[in-house]
Length: 295
Image (cartoon, rainbow, N blue to C red; front, side, top):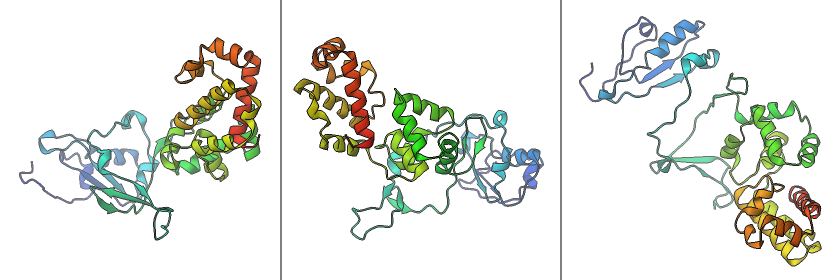
């Protein structure tokens, strides 16, 4: 057992395959081709031992030969666990953009403990819908997954427009392995799933929810309704803008503050809109304006 606080011992992976118990091994570097799953597990297994006395609770793999892409064994790997030691306050991604006086170059800048660092290379691994490890970029994987059912932008637009509930389309995409939440983390949380797919898969400029709501308000759609009906629709549009409301067609939205201040769902539908058919027609018209901004 090491007695010094920071012992450093370098050895070869060949020696680490012989069953030597190195409980404090924190770094494994792979820089050779590995064709045997057994050998791969033996090498990686040297880092899986925990020794809390010396602060050994994790280890790092530096893989220069993509060996980790070749071998996937869920029974051995186990589920991914959250890093309890990760402090998001100490990592501040900042995107250079229009607010940069020098113009910026569109790259993301990262700071760790207020020290700027740069990303030399990045590789993300995640499980697809069929349980296989995917190593291509999230955006490329999304393009391939969506294009199987919607080879063109028009095909996706038609399906989205025809769907009575937009959440049903999102559920379909997620069942095909599309990671909507992960896309939001990469592209931006201010975009709804419609814009994420249009932007990532079909290279369309993405509009934030606030931008879409603003465009709707510039149109004349609200002018065809009475004062109270306009106020209800405007409140629903606010909910979409602020919280990413997907199912405007759901009657449950009428029970949410501040929309509930206009009355019960029955009072709003019958008293303000003159019946369910008129209310649903107004909501679907609002959705049409929202995603086309032409109404």
